[in-house]
Length: 328
Figure 1 (cartoon, helix red, strand yellow):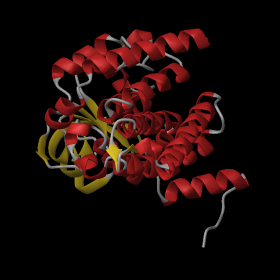
Figure 2: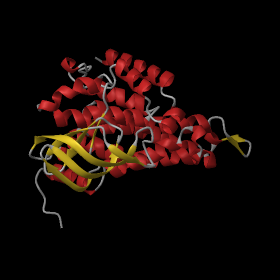
Figure 3: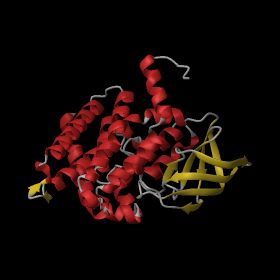
Figure 4: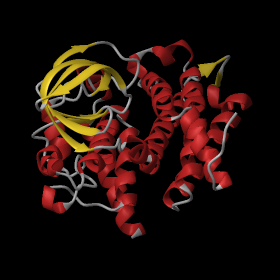
């Protein structure tokens, strides 16, 4: 299996380097042509069953794909994550499961209301009306919402896009809806789905850490200050070396299937720090898009704000104590 994983890693890395132009994706988004190409490689439907035109890969293979792609484009990795780790479990075992084939092949785009800012949604006669704010992937054809239960809404949607700090390859905005919907479950599946996505989310964080560090190492290897390369200054080289060891530790605990709670916590705690320092090693140039490192910092901040907060720390604490805690 290790040899197969190495081959997969090399294949995804080669594809990413050749096809994922970070500047185009950041400014123009993930085009339909690129989405079709990602789907044709089997990456878009990585964990989707074969019967729905997916690759049916195991968890480790799926995480390798996310990690390698996130080194080049966190936005593309997030696109794959939303479909495989959030949308798929939301429709699994429901009548909407048959939408997976079109999603895995790129015929339709699907997203999930996982930031969860609902405003005045009303349902009547198979229709849902109201406004849904802060949707990542607001140009999608299918949308899973978590309100009083779990429902799927069919597009097209009237959307108002706006600038978003991170994951700029994905459209972000608000949806004004007067659309058909179908209730899939009377309970919200979001907490359970998000919790089961810890491994995949950690893989994206790992890829972003690796991509940011590589940019920093390459730059400090050629940039000079006071007649010496930046790598020759101990504070710079020591910290980058320490961060590289952190990256290696994270990769080892992720793929050794250490407790996902601890892996996820470790990834989120280090993601922003490493991305920020990688930008800082470039000086003022780090904030220029041409150097390709600032996106990791932006995306790291957004990812941590979405996926890691008080709720996750409460779950981690209860996991450690192995019981429900009455927090004060």
